[in-house]
Image 1 (cartoon, one colour):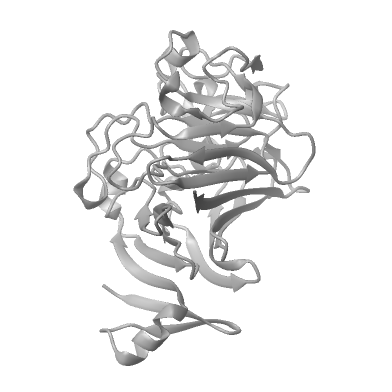
Image 2 (cartoon, one colour):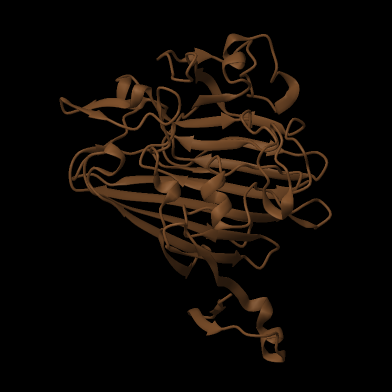
Length: 383
């Protein structure tokens, strides 16, 4: 395996070939912030790199150029012990064969579009129906399955990886050529900042998100039901039997969807409730309370066994909470671990599902005179 260290030495990044462990490497090991490794090839022969980012404060993240996947994310528990808190695989082949979007960047449009149909400027477009009758997460070959171009960087906020991809006109049925860039940054205070940017040469739609499955208990924790979750949302978007929003913005008051105060994920996950039964469990968009613009707190999570915490802030209007309902024990992940039902949860910052077919929802249209800009910050800690 080819291994390249990218060292943060004062002004910037310096690349150096890595062989065996040497004394000189040992003296500079604490300065290492980014390492690039060969991770194999896709079935059609595309080379995949893995970048390991360290922030010097106990946090480490591994990112693949395939799908922009966050393959591993290690944070410290209350005793200062690091463990991996995201689900995933150990090889490209496993991601290609059996991955429910583990850790992926999602595009062009995250979440569902009813019947794979939308209209833009009076023209109808047909997309793949890859989730029952609906279109999901960009189609059969969404951006979770492309190989992104990667560029490591260091700036005043921390160390990071800038991923770029150009989606051609007509890809997966979407109009226009879209140039996208996503930057992952690890900060010294254990934040993961995700910045999204895109432009287009003609009118189109876009709704990007990050699809990591979290389990703050660590790699050996079997479920996420004991995690305490808070979502700052007074309303959510109920769904029909195929998980498409009905168009209503329903109150969470008096329902299993009220996470305005910290509540364990398992407390009401099997409630006698039509929406929960359609999940089955949680697979719903929450309408975030946004009293102002900019970056605002959306959610927080606490895992009492490890003490790990995660707080999410975003510029997005919505948050999809998915409780891993369709994990069924048939997927073998990293280090041979089986992923049973509800062994990971997703909190996907986003615009609302099926937005093009609901004029009252925040628009996801992108035009040449515009730039798509979005930011989400994951802040990790322990108590």
